[in-house]
Image 1 (cartoon, rainbow, N blue to C red):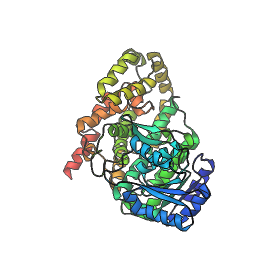
Image 2: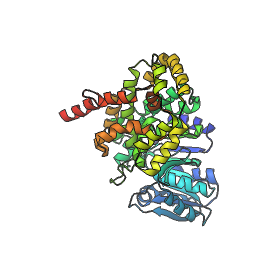
Image 3: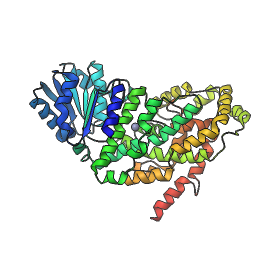
Length: 456
Ligand SMILES: [Zn+2]
């Protein structure tokens, strides 16, 4: 079933022509390579660990099938490979010495580095996934730190992806759990897109929406089995992650798969949260905690009637452009992040008049919008339980963040991306601060979760 869904999607995909997921899928590699690249020479790019796990096997299979192979490019295992631009320059310069097609053997970071390096050499590439750890395999763009800012550098997705379930199910448990959290984050990111759509900020594009959302409940439905290494649960997960990447490829934007929960993750990432941990705190784990946080915020927001706001008073107290810039600067201490946040916030700044118009529109659409968003979401507590069952962290303490910094993340995350989310809605409706206060008050969501943990 899943294979058919992916096949149908590939008919429309711009970059990726072939995806092969299955137990023993590595056997298909020589054929997939030949279909994509003919008789071109190949070079395996891996890190020390992924080279052992699958890279050697990939090398052997391609060699045996008669492909010309260049000496593999293997990054060291220690320190863990980081998605920074210096690594792209290194690999790119090396790739320029020949014309072989890169075969990335690894997961998120490695794939992103190869994706962008191959693009800078104007060369297509393919990827052999070693963990169901994130949704970037088939996504357009690479998430890379450049000039102190984590950014999505544009580059096409791989021409082909092979993911062998026998390899994926033996990946470190934390990596699979990270992929699960990245996928479950589409629950809140979908809600954010519904809001942006209803307010005319960012219209829903039905193909990109359907690829990510139509089967999300099915893909994320068996977290405990996934944790136990079940092959079918792993298949669901990787299918969801691949389809989610194809959604981004189709829409040429991460809007399909990333909302406020990702803004939490990006902010923490740019501030280096868990960067020196062993293993470093993953993208998915940050997204997971962000998803619980945003689902809990949604519960506070949806309880209110945003159809009867005092629009005149909200217009009156709306900050000017200059005031908005000052407030953003006051919330950030890292200079690069501060500049980036000012740029992003001002790109989505609206005047008091425009705020009035938007809030009037909100008043009209609120009853339907509220119902749609409720149907899209799950209770925050349920998201938390599902993440826990999969082996993911669900609160700030588990990712090394203090409660105060965590509470401040709600307002700060709103500033770092121009993408419109529930954080913007709450800010514009004048309820962000009070909603966050409620979440952290005695008997509020975080207090209840925290107390319950203490009781156990
Ligand atoms: Zn993600």
